Length: 283
Image (cartoon, rainbow, N blue to C red; front, side):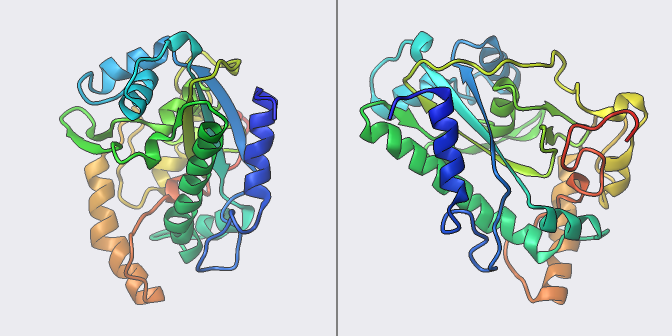
């Protein structure tokens, strides 16, 4: 197989087209629609910007992930990042959009078991490259991936899939911090860093929030948030989010479905104009 942007995108789409890979596991349903794939270069200045902006001593550059994994130095000019968006299915989105206080079990299963599929995809792609003699690492699958407390952001990770997708030309951010791609905001994200020069995807946007219609008065995600954690000025109170998950959603899921696993929300990603597309002012 010749390694090109097109061949990698096809590999990812073929992998996710297999029902054995694309599954909610405990529910007989696909976890995601077909992915979007983007590419970026390790030399993109946004990576250095995010390292400084998030935490220069915690967030890692692409080359740092490779160097830590393989114990030798890498030329950043030859390092690329493969990033993808895995959109929620229409069925999952519609069921979530009808909810007002807590998500459905389909949404919960995508967050838990669908995320396992996402990680399996990342690990499979990492393995594919390594078996073909090209060093690769999927940060989300690495034992060195970690979360940390942040005075500025409440909680941060040493690699951000959403920010990597932004750098890779896949979308821009909305008020609730979700990434709005061509397939909308209801999605999961992943990436693999490779020691292989690929063509970066052109970013057709210049602003970090260019696709968000809040600038034109949209308040849909604010109204959808049952925790009151989103504000018109772009504020997203993560502490309110986390408290609502623990104090409201977790008990509701137990009462309604007998579910006692990991509780999430995501209502701000559905029932909004940016749910499954880039919104326009008319939306």
